[in-house]
Image (cartoon, rainbow, N blue to C red):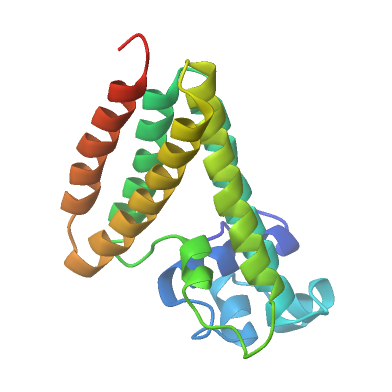
Length: 195
């Protein structure tokens, strides 16, 4: 949850990301988003005249960029280190929340949008996933992996970690992330030319 010392708008966005990661988007009203962020409802409407859609979109963008920042930092050390950081991030969120929170990007992605609508929050989720994949693929490329294998492995990493995060929540156990970590690390080591 957002800290009370952060600016109100930022607190609302961070709080929305946290609430969506716990309940999903469709189960959270604008009133609940404001309450979860410890922000006045009037401030929420002031900062987000587009309502719940706008808050949700910015929450997904916020979460996506937070993960991207972490990946950029850790991938400097190499793809295995980046993978470990990616897994560590989600492990921390799942365990620290007592298996109540997961990924807000995934939460928005699995909810059905209104029929025939292309929603901005779903577009933000697709963008976040694509950026994480690109960062991982670029790191693999920089370490001598061919472009197609790098792209395939990046998709595998993101899909596996996101799925394992959801499985951890359901099982109330870190075991899915532990198993995925072993297999993904082995997959990376198999394709690295110097490994």
